[in-house]
Length: 413
Ligand SMILES: Cc1ncc(COP(=O)(O)O)c(C=O)c1O
Image 1 (tube, rainbow, N blue to C red):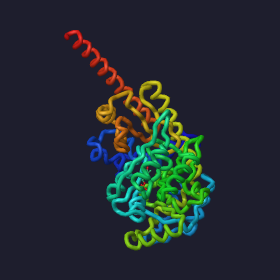
Image 2: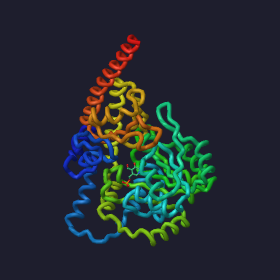
Image 3: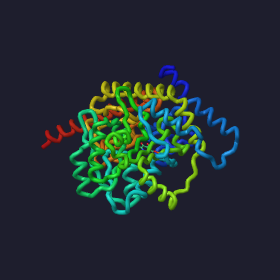
Image 4: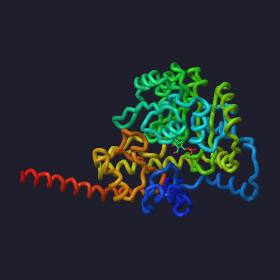
C-alpha cells in the first residue's frame, strides 16, 4: 500500500464525532470555523487488527473488571526489539490512564512540595502545569536554537540543577514541539549530569515510535543501563500517539529500580486505585502485534506531508523558518521574520482560519512560533498553504501601506 492508498483507506472525517480537536473549536479558540491543526492526535483510523480485536471484545458485550492480557508484555517486548532493539523488563511495568496523569503521579511520589523540578522549554505545556499544580518549584533550562533545530544547553542545565538543588527533571524524548530525536551522546551527557547531582529523570517517551527516516530513537533507559544508572530513570510511554488511541486511556510507566518501584507502589496504595483499561490494552496489544505495516505507512505519510509543506513554505513564504522534523508529527514554525509576534493570532487564527498551538504556550521565549499537526490529509495541508499564501498578500499589502505612510509622514515633516 502506498501513501495515497493509506490516506484513502484510513482518513476519517471527524467533525461532529465529539472529537476534541474538531468539535471543541468554539470553546477553545472562540471560533468553530477553523481548520484544526492543534492537539496531537490524527485523522487516521487504527490498524485493521485493532478494530477487529476491539470488535470481538465488544461483541462479547461484557466490560467487567479485567486482567492485563496474558501476552501483553511479550507482545510489547517483541515490538520494542523489532523497532528500537531495546529491552524493558516485565517487572518494571505499571499502567496509567495517560502519560500526563503518570507525570502528576510520579511528581507527587518522588518529590515534596516546594522542591525544584527542571524542564527544557520550549516544551509540551502540561510539563509546566504539573510542576505548578503540584506546587513544586519550576526551573527551566531553555534549549538552544539553530541553525535548523535545537540542542540542550548542558552548561546551563548543570548550573541550574546545582543552583536550585533540582530533585527531578522531566525529559521529553523525542521532543515536542521541536521534533528532535535525541542522540545517544546527548542523552548520555544529560543523564550523567542528572545522576552526578542526584536528579531523578522522568523520560516522557510517548513519541518514541514516531521517528522519521534517517533518525534512530534510543530510550533513556537504554543509555542509563549502559551507564549503570538505571536507578535514576523512570520511563513513560504509550501506544496512544503511535496508533491514535488516546481516549482508550492506556499508558505505561516503567520503573527499573526496585527501590523506586516500592516507593511508587506505596504511593499508589495511598493515592491511586485505578483499574486497567481493558479496551485500551486489547487495542494496544493488537497494535503491537500487527501494526508494523500500518505504522510504516503512517510515517511515510507524515514524511511526505512534512517534505511537501516545507517545500511549499520555502517557495511561497520563505520568511517562515521550518524546524527540521526528526520525530513526532508536530511541526514547529518560526514566523518571527514574517509577521510580528503580537500579530500571529490575528493573521493565523482570525485571517487564515487555522487552529494551531501558539509558541507562547511552550515557552515565554517563543511567542511568534506556532506548532502545526501534520497527521492529516494532503488536501487539508493544501488548504493550510492556500490560506497562508492569502494572508501573505495581506501582510505584504500592510507592510507596503505602512512604508508608504512613513514616507508620507517624512515628506510632511
Ligand atoms: C510529550 C507528550 N506527553 C504526553 C502527551 C499526552 O499523553 P496522554 O494523552 O497519555 O496523557 C502528549 C500529547 O501530545 C505529549 O506530546
